[in-house]
Amino acid sequence: MKATDPDRHDARVYTRPFARLLAGLPAHPIIVEVGTAYAVSSENQASCGMSTLAWVEFVQRHGGEVHSIDIALDHLAVCRATIALELGTTDCLACHGGDGELVVQRLVKALPRIDLLYIDGGTGGDKAAAQLRAALPALRRGAGFVGFDDCASGDPAQNLNPEVRVSEVYRDPTAFDLEHVWTDGICMCYRVHQP
Image (cartoon, rainbow, N blue to C red; front, side, top):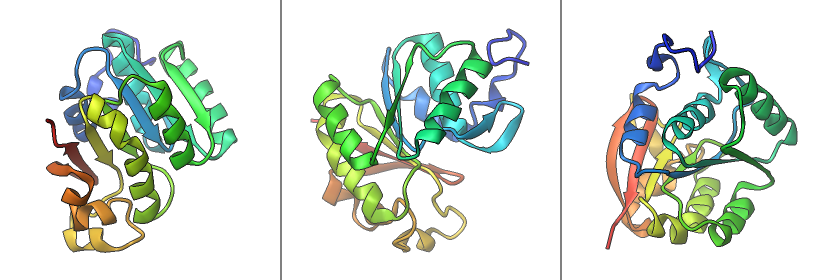
């Protein structure tokens, strides 16, 4: 069954955390994710990259654009092929190869804003913090949501482990001008303080 089939059940792609992130976005959002889909199918929810499928399906329905970043070019090729197969087009998806922090720096200069930065790539809190710092100017121009995947919701103290993406933000969100919005499963949502 294709993602565009009318009788398709949204829960197969829009897991609860993704739906919560998308619900807060403005019309025609600009979504930037670090870490792309590289083994994903709407038939296999345990695969890597369900977020890319959710973001693209959402902007196909509501307008906007998705920028997916990965250092592994083969992951980007799989992402484009998978999105084309599952959703029928990749028109609203731009894939960017390279280091997450460096690509985010370029996108901040090129995009009018970032409404959602979803960090699901790289290893460790220091890398994720660098990607976030690079995105802050564009997040301040947009809705300012930041999602972190693979957080430890069962034992929140584990989020202090430097290997966990959210670790530096979890320690002190105010250092990034962020406030915690919610935690749902292994996803944590923060938002840049709005002026």
